[in-house]
Image (cartoon, rainbow, N blue to C red; front, side, top):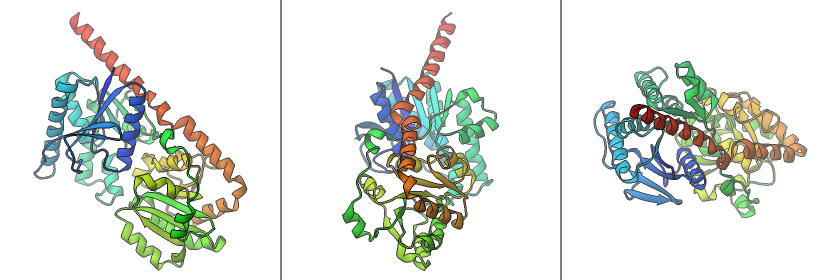
Length: 409
C-alpha cells in the first residue's frame, strides 16, 4: 500500500478552510486505498498529544518552538519540520512527501526528501504573500512580500511535482518560468458523502434569528476585508427598495467583524441584517438551510483573481443559489446564468440589482439549483477528483524507480 505523508501548516482539530480541504483530501485518499498521515509544523497552535487522531485521521506534531528575528525564525521552523519529517520517516517510511503551502512546509519537505530519497509533491492553495495583503497584514511589493514570493518560487523549483487548486495559480507559476508540465491542477471540491444532503429549513432557528418570511441572502465564512462584506451590507438598502422583506444573514467572524457590525448598525437597513457570530462546524448546515441565495462579493485584487474559494461549491452542494463578484477565482467556479450569477466587484449597486433580479426569478430557482449541484457532482466531488493525485504520484514514483535502475546499470 502506497504511503503518503501530508506536510501541513496546521490541521484538525483547528477549523479553517485549509484544514477542511486537508480532511477531504486525506479521507478520499484513504477511501481509495492509500495509507495517509499528516505532519504539522510549528504553526499548529492547538494543544494536544504528539500523535493525534481526529475524524479517523492520524496527525503527528512537530515538537518545540522557533524564536529569533523575522527571517531567521522561519528558517528555524523549516529546520524543525524537516527534522520531524526525517524522524517520522524512520518509523513509518512514506513513499511520497506531499507538502502543502505555505512555502515553509514545502522547503522542509524538499530538504527532508533529498536526505531520505523520497519524492516531493508541493501543493499551493494560495500565494501567502497575496493572502497577507488581502488580510491587511502586508503590502504588495514590500520586502516581506518579495521574500515570501522568492521562498515560494524556491519551493516550486525544488519539488518533483507541483499541484495548484486552480488555473490562475498555475498561470502565475508558468509566468515565473516553471514548466507547464510540472504543474497539475487539483480543484477545490466537496465531500458529497458528508456535505451533499441539504437539511430542511429549521423553523425554530429562523424564529430565534427573526428571519421573517422573505428571501434570505446568506454568507458563511471568515470576515476578511477581501471578502467584500462591506459592499454586501451597503447593497442592502437598494435591495430592500425592491424587496422590503429581504434579510441578510452573516455567519462567522474575523478581523472585519467589529467594523462590519458598526456599518450595519448605522445602515438604514439595520433591521434586516443578522449577525450570528461563529457557529460550530457541525451546525453550519442548519444556517445554510435558512438562506435562499449565498452571496460572495469578493473585492477585485490579485488574491481574488488568482485563487478559487471553496464556499461557492459548498453552497451549490447545499442547493443554494450563488451570486458572486466577477473576479477570476469565481469565474473558474461559476458560469454566469447557468450555475450562478456574477456581478461587478466593488459595486454595491450591481450586487443589489443582481440579488433583486434573482428574487424576481423564483420560477427559475429549482433549475438553477439543479444545474449547480450537477456541476459540483461532475467536476468537484472529492472522491472522484482525488484520482488526479494518483497520476502525479505514479509519475514521481516511476521516475524514481527508473533513476535507480539507471544508477544500478
